[in-house]
Amino acid sequence: MSAIERKPYKVTDKAGFWVAGQKLPTDKGEDGIPKPRVGYVLHLTEDEAKHELAAGVIEPGASAGA
Image 1 (cartoon, rainbow, N blue to C red):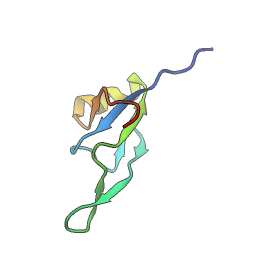
Image 2 (cartoon, rainbow, N blue to C red):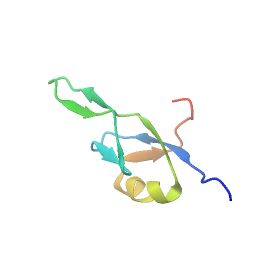
Image 3 (cartoon, helix red, strand yellow):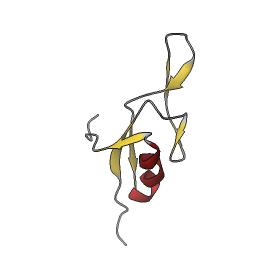
Image 4 (cartoon, helix red, strand yellow):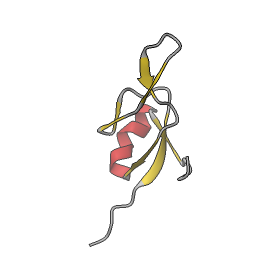
């Protein structure tokens, strides 16, 4: 049985609090209201990332060390 390949994807400012079924960590905005952490790296399979890429909430090719 082979391992499922996961690739890194960086969260964009279009993301909500949940991306690909995963809850994102939050940062406080200037107004003190929590917002999803832009730039956070998720490791997803191609199937998990497909819809999120089309919606523009993640970007491919984030470095593994980010």
